[in-house]
Image (tube, rainbow, N blue to C red; front, side, top):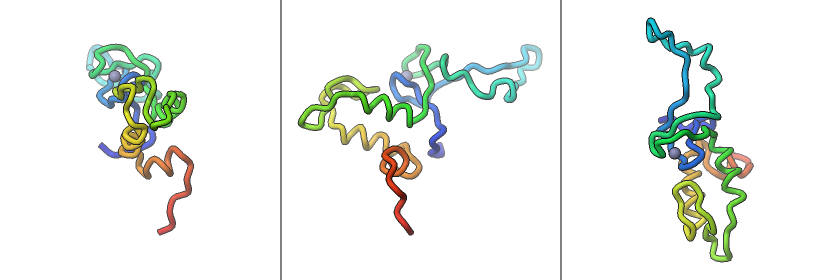
Length: 116
Ligand SMILES: [Zn+2]
């Protein structure tokens, strides 16, 4: 899957194995992309959680992560996505970094891209 900042994730677990509701002609089963766009991100479905979830971008997840308390050892003090309390914040940063087309520093921390 191509990395983009518009990719949607399950807000509960961070999975991309998600479904959004779509408008389909019941007679032809033809998917109406115009009527479905934009997708209903409030009420998506996560195949991993097996329940309804909010669908959010990586930027929103980064916002969510910013309010998770971190202790003096750089460990999470609360659960975030699938990361248990006690996980190193750098493990979480790595998770974000892997999903950012230009890397965590540029896409989410607002650093200027390095000149080529
Ligand atoms: Zn989920």
